[in-house]
Length: 393
Image (tube, rainbow, N blue to C red; front, side, top):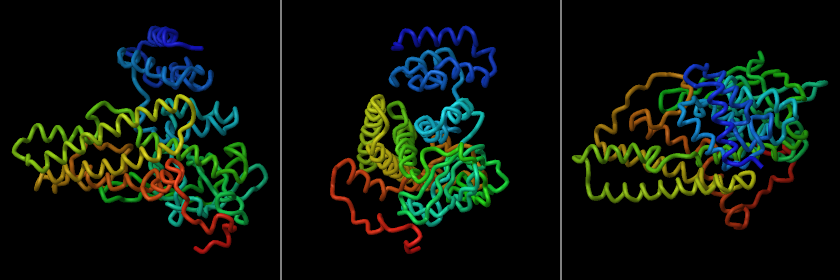
């Protein structure tokens, strides 16, 4: 069993052999991956050492103290938080060896082709078709709300392979090449003025069967791995006390005493406590991950994240008064990442509205928490055993 002292020794050896100050950033990250120090709980040869997940903090602390570069996790968050766990659990040896290293290093950006115009909250109703043609699958359809599609080299994709089966049982999961000539990415402009999201049109896209994850028709089960990890990565990110959006609001409060009122003070205190509870809940959830895969508790964390961000940004705009109505720019851009803390209050207010939609709508997450965490009776679902092709649309 790899222990903390061995990990410190391995990390110091990496730093000695590849000094961060004189080593190319990408070369250093590749060396870190090959040394098993990327994600220590992954298997040996795939960026890890089969070590306890909790020991990753030992490696990260040593590297941070030495000024080593990270892999820019905000830019490649979909790959790290959603694609990688799914590839690890369901990919063949060849798939894992091909994709995990460039994914973690950041050489290849990933996106997620799940939601569709007619299948967002009810994702299992998706209609994008994949038809077998020899050793390939031919995919036709449309996806929407696709973050980073304009940057992505690869995508995780779910498509319908059996329209005669009920909607949850006729889906298959694939890795899609975003450079295929049949893939068209169109910007989807948001309320912020930017096009961080995209529409993706798939026309005759050929995917080799070797890039299928899981069994044919079992894509919904595979997708649950992705979705549960997605909600943890969105709602359970590690932040320091008073980090994130509550930190911006608290800073404004301290620096602008002329804006304060007793009522705003009371509401700020309530939100500060809520933010600290959410932070500690996320820490506890990460500790639970040491024992296995994320469960439905991640849905509760993501639900709280959305509600808290919207409440904090709303109070920040109210605290600033007329200044809160100002907006820095409404230029059409296609950014590489979402930067809540590096922008103005108006941006935070508008962008946080999407938090209750992305990564699972709040309404769907409430159902998950009610049924799978609290054990309440499930809602009636009359379409579970009806063939997808016979569903009303």
